[in-house]
Length: 372
Ligand code: 9MR
Image 1 (cartoon, rainbow, N blue to C red):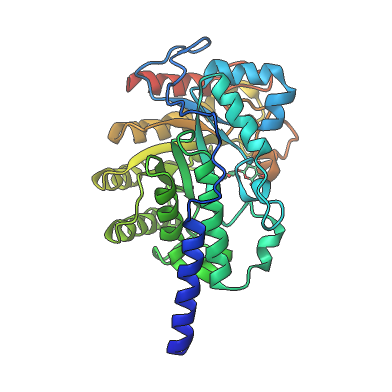
Image 2 (spheres, helix red, strand yellow):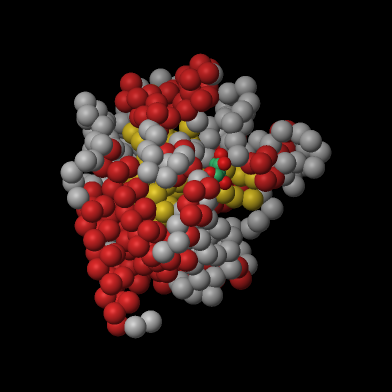
């Protein structure tokens, strides 16, 4: 590439960045104040002050159509996160268009019930609309990424205090921090997409806690050890470049048949803590597709796996929050990929499909209380 091409590209990039970061024309959500006040006296779960905040992914459609589900969320959660409504596919159905109806519905629900909201997610290879395939240059990719983060984060500035800015950056079996999952962002921006996303979010809302969210970091085996190692490398590289980052989200989609690597996980968390980063558990659930069919046996094994994980984590760090990826087995992503071969419904979450508490609920409660 010639020097001329470089400088033109850099000029275009700077121009795109400047335009995207300009504060004119932002769409801040007026009349909505920050609601950092947690639901301290949650009716079903008793007093929650001093406990690790618990929350769940929620679905806007179900909150609207299913009043028993809505009541269960209000009764049990201090925070919520949109399962899909704040992803690109929902907010950016066509190029140049921003649609916030469903995201705003979740914000309104949370505000009415004094729940805090986590934002999910701004820079991810998944959950993208089709039109993103039209992006064909570094300038366009940078423009779209920055414009998106600027628009979404500024809309919810002071309303969403914590964002999963970067989601699942690593390939399944990384060799190093350079093993980033190929996607539109890496194709045109390379590894720079991570600092670009974090810096943009920090500029737009300097008060927000910015989180890098990853999965498959807790298990025993070479692939999971490689993921922990690569993620630590990535975190160090970001720190060395003074990239704003406040926390690491452990998604914790556990598998009942995978052993937790207690020592490996604890060493990994100790390093994260030494970097002064928060640890959050962001998407806990237990995939049960290979467990026995008998419900009581299955629920006990699911709870045991979560206890094994939470026990290892909580011995070295007090997570800032524990969220499950759904509250009730009535609404879970698990059967999309992990349907049970016996055809029985999956049971990965703290409440069953009738919204009754399962042993997993009690395990989470115990850890929240133990660390109060
Ligand atoms: O549960 C989510 C499902 O409803 C969506 O279809 C899917 C694609 O957007 O994302 C699922 O949530 C994922 C989360 O955003 C990131 N970690 C893994 C979650 C489960 O696949």
